[in-house]
Length: 101
Figure 1 (cartoon, rainbow, N blue to C red):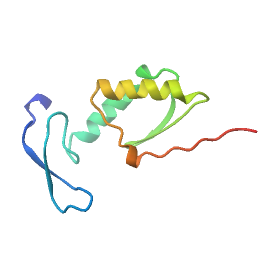
Figure 2: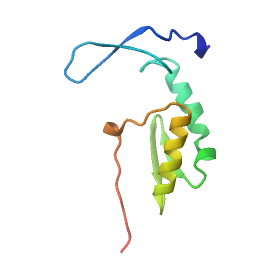
Figure 3: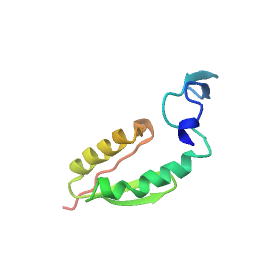
C-alpha cells in the first residue's frame, strides 16, 4: 500500500512566511496523511528494541525520555530514526537537564 503512494507528486506545505510552498515527496508520507499516525505508533512500539536502556513515556507523537547517561541513548535513537527515514524536528524539540545535589 505504501509503495503505491503517489511518490514524486507535488504536495503543499506551510513554510515560514511564505503562503504557499510545493515540494516533491521522495519518501514517506506527507504531513497530515491519514496513515501518518498509524505508522508513527508502529515505529514507536519498536523503539524499545533499538534503544534498550531507554526509559520513556509517550503520548500521541510526543516522547519523553530520561536517563542518567543520555548520550548513548540519543545516539541509538538517532540511528533508529536514520534507519527508518524518520526526522526529529529539532526546532520543535525541547529538553531539560535535571541533577541532584
